[in-house]
Amino acid sequence: MLNTKPNWPILAVMAGISLTACKILPTKSADAGNAPAFKPDKMVEEIWAAKVVPYLQQKAGPFPEVHTLATTDAAAAGAKYGNPNKQANSPWTFAVHLEGKIVAANTQSRAATVDVDVDGDGKADARVQIGPAVRGTALRDSLDFIQFNDFTNQIDFAQFGKAFNAYADKTVLSKLPRDALEGRSAKVLGAYTLGSGQDLPLVTPAEAEIGPKP
Image 1 (cartoon, rainbow, N blue to C red):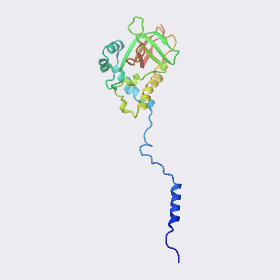
Image 2: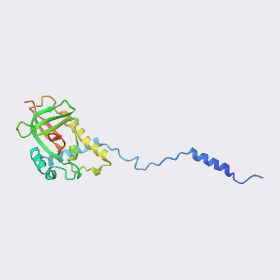
Image 3: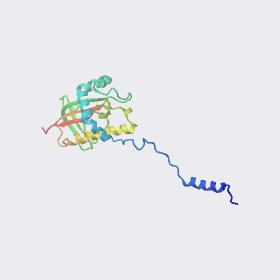
Image 4: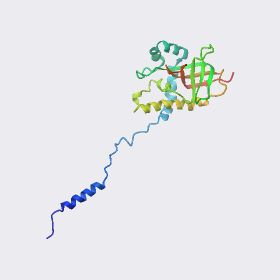
């Protein structure tokens, strides 16, 4: 007679071999493969002309007026010329426009700057960054429609700030002259952060013009 009983030991061994031959992989979530890549440079490019420059043009005050108020009542200056939606522990950043004469220039460093006399007394009142390396995140921080909570993490927020500087250099600063700058006129729309550790307020331009040689 044929043995009709199942051969349990053999089936168990075969099942064991099948399991060891299979490797269980975690299932990717549906969102993981579809999440858009974070592209801060493209994001800045898309809002620069439409939102950033118009905002600064509307918000900025004359540098002497802004800086005088900022050094006496930073909160009042921030409410008028700054970003009232900033994080509570962040310093105030102010939108300004300034005009004056360049009294000193440092173009040997990649973080090049010009010192500008705004009030005509022959002494520098502000230091303006002309790149290509641009320090700080003043442009990003001056905008009340940019909030930290809109970003996934602090790294993305920091990269977004650097993207403003890179775009300003690409579209504005890289086109400025680099030789014989002392004595020329300068006209700037930009932003600076109060108490940045500089001897002079360090202004990051969104728009900048340097006049011809005198």
